[in-house]
Each structure stands twice: as structure tokens, then as C-alpha cells.
Amino acid sequence: MYTFDNSGVLYWGIYDQPAMKQFRQIRATLRSVCRGWKELVDSPYIEHRCMRFCIPTHPDEDQDSRRVVLARRIEVISPPEMIDLPECVLGRVIKHGEKLNAEILLDIGGSLFSQILPACKASLPSLKTLMVDFQNSTYFPSPSHPLETTLPNLHFLTALILRLRSGQTLDNETLCQFVNLTTLSISRPTELPHLDFSKWRFNLLQHLELEHLCEPGGFTLFFQHIRPFSRHLRYLRLVPCRVYYVNRIDIYNIWDCYELERLEMPLNLLFMWEGEPQKLSRLKHVVHTAIGPLSLIGRIQCKDDFMQFYGCLLRFCLQLRSLRIVTDSHDWPLIFQHADEPLPSGDVTNPKFHEQQIYNSMAAVTMVIARKIHGIGLRYEDKKRRTMMETKAQLRAG
Image (cartoon, rainbow, N blue to C red; front, side, top):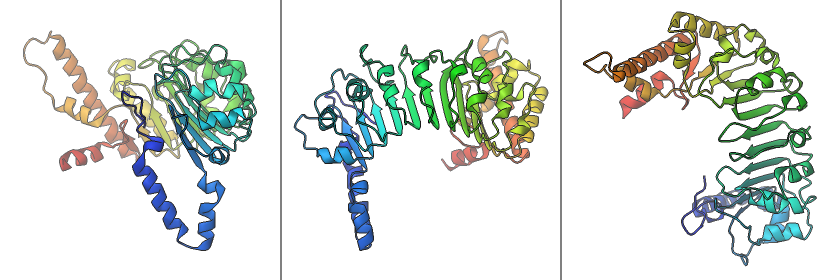
């Protein structure tokens, strides 16, 4: 989305001339339709709808402070090596105590969140959506201004998206104060810090993403305490820290998430154990989030008894009345490559022989899964949202 060259110049945002040219062309077209449309396009709500700051900016850069105040969406993007946030019009406006109308704030790099917001507690009274991404930054929040010093001042947030760095923590007590959240997304490249799900009371939550949960205390604790915040959940994404799970985990509370329409998690946790999937009557799309595809799960958990595996999978799918799509974590071109690759000739004790034998078996199983799921009227996709037949047609077309 955004890149920096060696001099620190950002080739995105305000420097994205083609996008700005397209915006001006569309704006000019809309203004020419009629007087009513012209007045709407020229109104402050539209004219100043988005303000994007690319840090570092030149201190004397000509930016109108009025645009900052009126902007409904503010994006601040700083390079990975950013240490000190230079003086800019946004910083000056906030330091002067002006209240911003921003409803959406995106902070890529974390500089704004860590350096400006902690000192200006009342500057964003209308903020509803906050996204902070520390993952591509070498900058850590100042010890005097950790995440916890800023988050409590934003009680009216309805959407919170946090991309944490490895080793970065998040205070449970602070997180639990956002009782109005409808969207919550937390991720970290390594396993997530401990989250006390027993204290979560997000009664309005509709969209939840957690990456990467780990055991012990990850999936198990999550499902034990999911009921208080699952009443309105429509989208749930859980990504494990490990490749796959073999041991049984009690997930019985998942069957009480009646509003779920899309569920992303290791699917073997759903269909390999007893449950009541028929309760998920609105579920339309399930996604397998473990790195190992379902064929690998079947090989490990069923000891190559794939008939048992197929039976569990199809029975699970048939109990979901609204289900339309099953997305696995494999890649179809790679599956075709393994299926067509012959076994190495020579000594069968050669490790490469057994390795290729496993690949061939998994490829064959994946294609059987595709046919069986297609046979009950469902769409079976790989991680890039392609079916087996669509991929074959693309490969034939070149």
C-alpha cells in the first residue's frame, strides 16, 4: 500500500498523483451535473472528507488548518525508521486545542498515536474508528506514553484495529472500557499477549479478529468465555499461532453464536468433534485459517482413514442450512503440481520418496474433498478464493 525509498520519500498518499488526478476528474464531472450536485461536492463535508499526511512533511508545507479540522478521515503515515515526529499542520492544530471532526483515524507507523494524541486528550470527540499499525515500524511507543495512556480517552470508539509489534503488550483493563465496540481486531506477528476474555463485555460486538492465538490459554479460554460478547457476532476470525491442532479443545459455546454469517478458524476444531452446527443457521461462509490444509489435518488426525475424515466434513457441512462456501488454506496450482509429479525412482527408503508420496497423497485427497463438497452444492476454494475448475480454466488460458 505504501513504500519508501532510501531518502524517506513516500510514494503514496499526497504524492500519489494519478489517484489525485482521478479524484479531481470525478469531482469536476459531479460538479457539472446540476446546481444541487455542485453545492454538495463543494460543501465542507465532501471537500474536506479525507486528509492524508505523509510523514516526514516539510515544516513549511502549505496545508490549510481548516481542512484538518473539517476532515472526516485523517491518515498519518510515517516511515519505519521514524523516531521523532516533525512539526506539521496536524500537530499544530491539535496543540492549539482545536477539536477535530475526524470520525476515522488511521495511523500507519504509530508516530501520531504515540507522540501527539497522549498530550491532546480532548481533540477527537467524534472519533469512531481507530486503526494503529506498529508492525512495520522500528519505533516503540514511549514508556511515558504507552497504548494505555491514550486508549482510555476514546470511550466512544465503535471500531478498534490494533496491529501490534512482537513483544508489544495490551492492557486488558483498558481494552474492556470500550463497551460500544462493534468491531475489534488485534494482531501480532508472534503469539498474542494474554487476553483475559472472562472480563470482556462487548455486548454490541459484531466483528472480531484475533491473530495469533496460542495454547495454552488461547482457543480454550476464548471459547469458555465467548457467550457474553457473542450475541451479535456476525464475523469471527481466529488465527492460530501453530500450524495445526491435534488435541481436542472444547468449543461448545460456539454453537450459541446464532448470528454468525462468516466464521474463520481451524475447521478441524469444528467438524471433528461432537457439536450442534445446526444452530448456526445463518452461517454462509467458513474459512480454514490453519496453515496446514484440511488434507494434512485429515492425514494427522484420522491416521490416513480418509473415509472417516470425509464423513465428518460432509456431515458438518450438511448441517449448516445456509452454508454456501468452504475456503481451505491450500493453493490449487501447487496441488496440481504435486499431483502430476511422479515418485522418485530408486530406493524406497530415500526420504525424498516418502516426502513426494505424502505430497501426492495430500493432493489427491484435496481434489477428492473438492469433488465431494461440490457434489453437495457448495463452493470449495483455495486460499486465493479460487475453485479447482476455475483454476484449471485459468491455467489452460495461459
